[in-house]
Amino acid sequence: MHGAIKKRGEHNRSWGARLIVLVPYLWLATFFLLPFLIVVKISFSHTAIAQPPYTPVFDPAAGWEGLKQALSALSFENYALLASDWLYLASYLKSLEVAAGSTLLLLLIGFPLAYGMARTPRRWQPIVFVLVVLPFWTSFLIRIYAWINILQRDGLLNQVLLALGIVDAPPAWLSTDTAVYIGIVYSYLPFMVLPIYATLEKMDETLIEAAADLGCPNWRAFWLVTVPLSRPGVVAGVLLCFIPIVGEFVIPDLLGSSQTMMIGQTLWTEFFGNKDWPVSSAVAVVLLCLLVVPIVIYQQMETRDPAGGR
Image 1 (cartoon, helix red, strand yellow):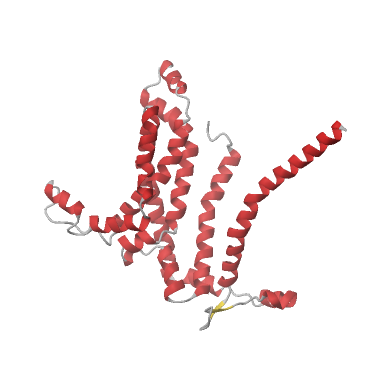
Image 2 (tube, helix red, strand yellow; image 1 turned 120 degrees about the vertical axis):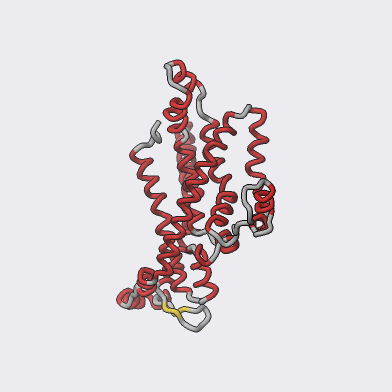
């Protein structure tokens, strides 16, 4: 009797464990896979003056025969347009350029900041942590509008530069790539700092002491011990910054110019301005495929080196 009860309890626990594992998959299927499939379906449709503004190639109500006819008449003209029109190619390349450059700047600024936070005395770390996330307490849009006032020709930045004698005439900051980089680095810095800090904060300090006892200089111990151990946080921070920056819309739209046309702006123009849902859906599908690449590369690296270089 006791064995049967024990076996039943183990069976219930196994089902509970399966349900717990199943929840994130159901979440992804409902809020990611299903909407993505809808977007893919629209990307193969034809533009039309109607509501909604496209003619679907595949109608689920037509059944199996309708599916076969849709597959036989399948057209990749929307994707061919993306490959043939320099506007879309330039937008993709500009997005990757801005995302790569901004992520590099974020890493160069965020790593020393996270390292300083991790080396701060324990009693001060919560205060420093709050200071890093403090900008999140204000609306994202308000913060970007504040940068418009700071970067305009008679704004605070030029007033400070003129007062210090660094420049003789107020330079133009707004509607430039520099303004876009400033806005992105400012907005995404916590996403780089916090993962690296979480990794460095758990690092065993005795490893540094052991390296010093073996005659390793401080800079060499930092390079050979601290940097490799911080790799998981660095990779997480890079992915958290690079992926959303590629599709960024608000910052380049408010701080940039027509020369800073990123793919997020192109997507918005096609969807809301031109009302071309099939082309905008194709743009979104290609963008998602581009964003999946770094995630797949990271997963492959982790599969080959589970220890993360440790």
